[in-house]
Image (tube, rainbow over all chains, first blue to last red; front, side):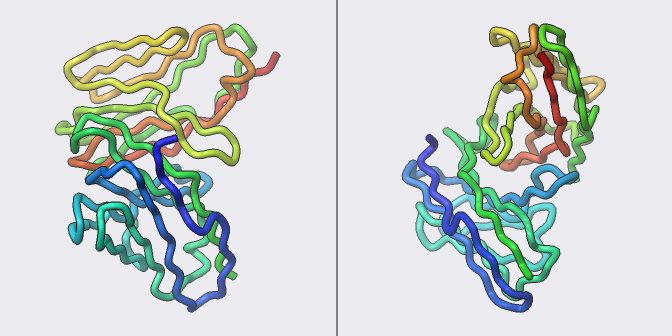
Length: 114
Length: 110
């Protein structure tokens, strides 16, 4: 196990409500990532972080914000959830160094927006 | 931005046959290409990776080849077994992130 914990594991919420997903790592890695996984689309990058308070947008960042106030936690927030954000969300950390090293994924959060 | 195309989307083979999955990428700056396996309801897990200074890498029944000139890389699984049934994703590096293909569902029947 790569020392990544995602919470909650499952969540059902209503359209228009705010939702925050948490990713916690025990590895002290600098780089952390949020992906969403949908049938037919594979894994798509939402946002990533390269250090405390340092974040950048990915492929599908609209409707999402992130925060990283300490190394071990990376939060993903849906300010006003929509049905199109129903998905499985994976957090990942990068192994040693920023480049040429694999990502290790958490167990995912299944979010349903009704 | 980087675009990673993966083919085929589904692949069915008989146990013992070989399976090949192919990916192409668009960003010539990409220099790291991992492959992930995802079983139903589980997280993606790294099975093999290759860096741009290497043309081929092998790990038991799994091998990956890379053609940087043509911007494509492939996963080869030999002597397939039922436990190889899963979704396989290729990815290419873009700066500090990875961009993934849409996945290939491999089914191995005994």
